[in-house]
Length: 195
Image (cartoon, rainbow, N blue to C red):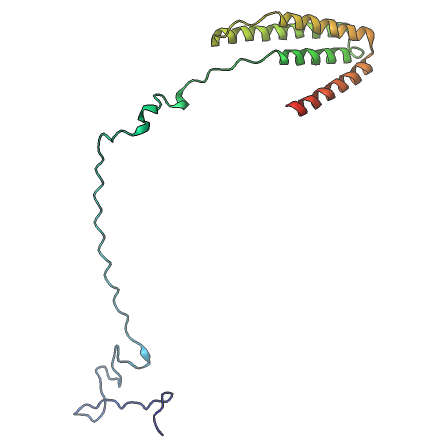
């Protein structure tokens, strides 16, 4: 049968001169190592690791860098270290809203509470306005602001008391509560429209 690439002819084993056959140390017919049949061989030792590269020397920086064109525009003090002065409130809108809410609450609850309790509410309202006015004076002195007008505080106290008592004398509590709901709805709509 002729040789073909699919079926090669086996090569004869080398013969040793003294025995007439192939003999290898260890009593086997085949050699140990790379010449063993089937492509088996001992594992090769791992190659030595490559040498580590030497670190490059750090660049030496010039102690005085050359001046740049924008050096004269540099800040002397970083912005985050500057003290931000407190801003003064604009107008007395909080005072007006507080007075309106007091009038609504006092006049709306007049039919359900005693006259003495309503009088206590008026005293507490005046005390809260006095505390707010003193706080405003303290903030002016601490921040070095110009003194603002003092008349809105007592005016709010007087208008709030008179307004609540006039509504109590003219209307009953359910009418005041309904009117308060309408006024608060209109105010909420204006806030949502104009922010």
